[in-house]
Length: 399
Length: 105
Image 1 (tube, rainbow over the protein chains, first blue to last red):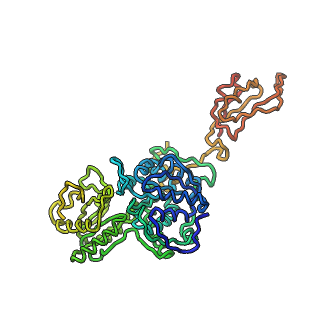
Image 2: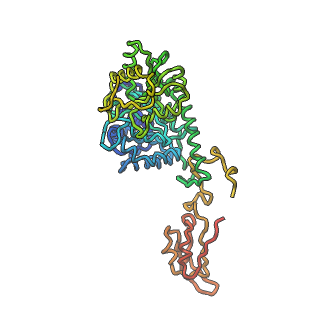
Image 3: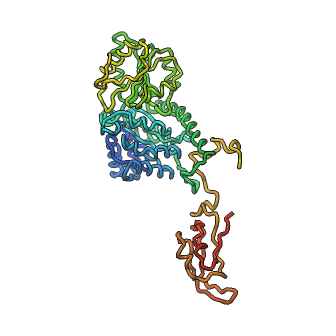
C-alpha cells in the first residue's frame, strides 16, 4: 500500500520532502538509511509515513551507511522495491557497496543531496561527494528544482527496473540550496504515479536457490563488467523515452540536457544543479549587453548524453564548464570539464571554472563576471590551459 | 582446458554473475558433492557422529537393528540428506570407520 493522493494537488515542499513524497507514492517495500546532513529530512519524513501506517514498507534502522546500502541490496535481491538516501561522508562510507549494487545489477534508487567532504568539516554544498561516485556504475541524475526531484524519482524507478537496464540509480541535487529550500510542487495522484512506474522488479530468487556474489576468474570477470557497459548504453536510450512518456502523462518535460538561449549563442556555459536558475539571469543580463551567451544544464550525468551536447555545441566558439568539485593535481581541475574535454568530438574551446566549493555563494552577478572574463580573454593564448578558481581569495581574477 | 575463445560471450552469461547451483538445488545442501553413508553392520552406536555433526543432520531413531553376527541394538543413526552439507566430520570422527563418503554424481 502507498500513501494515497486521490487527485493532483499542489504542495510547498523542499527537494528532500518532494523526494520523500514520491517514494511514499511508489509502493516501496524496504527503506534503510542512516541520518546525515543534509539528507536526514528525507528519511525522517519516510519514517513518519511508515510509523503512521501511510506507507506499508519495512523501515530498517541501521548503524551506518555501509549497512544501509547492504540492507537494501539484500532486500533487492529478494525482489523488494528499495530506497535509501545519503550525503557526503555517508556516500563515501557506502562506496564499496556502490560497486556491489551495480555489479549485482540491482535496481536500488538512492537520493543524494550533495555536500562537501571532510577535512575540514563542511556540512554545506558542493559536488565532491557525488563526483567520487561517478565510476561506480550507477545511473546519476542531477536535478535542479524540487518539482524535478519529485518527477525524477518517479522516472528513476522505471529506468532502474527496466529489463534492459537493471542498474541502481542516484537522484542527486544540491544540499541545502535545494534540500532545505521550499518551492511549490505539483503532486500527482498515487494511481497515476504507480501506473507510470509499476513494480516490475521480481528479484533473483523467484525460481529457487541462487549463488550471489560469486567469484569470477580472469576468464569471466571482464564479460560481466562489459555487460554493465551495454546496460549503460540502454539506460541512455531508455532515459530519453521515459522522459518523453512522462511528458505525455504529466505534461512536464526536462530532457537529458536542458538549454537556454543557445540558438544563436557564441559562448555557452554548462552547469549542473541549482546554479541553473542563477545562470539564466546572468545570461539575460549579458544578452541585454549584446553578448551572445547561452546555457546548458546537464540533467543526466551517467550515462553522459555526449551526442546531444555535441549537437547543441555545433558551430559554437567557447564552452565554459562550471564544476563544484576539484580533481586535485590536474591542470584542468574540474571533473566534469575533464569529461567534456575527453568525450566531446568538437573544435569548441573548453574553459574549466571551479566555483561554489563548500557552498561559497555563487550569484547571478558572479556568473555575469565569469561571462565577461571569458568574453574578454577568450582569444588570448593559453586561455583554456588552466582552470579558473573563481572566488578564492588570493587568486587574481580579471573580470 | 578450453581455449578462451570457446567460452561464452558477455551476452550468453547470466547478468551480475548470479548463478544457480548444479547439485540438489531444492535442498539446503546445494554445495554437497560427497554424501556420508553409514554401515549399520560396523556401527557400534557410540553416538559420536550425532554429537559431532555441526548441522544436526544425523538423526537418532528408536529402530532396532540386529547384525549378521547376532548383536541387537535398540537405536539406529540415520542421515538427513536435506540438511547434510557433506563436510565429512562424521566419517573422520567415527572410531570404527562405519561411515564412508560417497561421491554425489
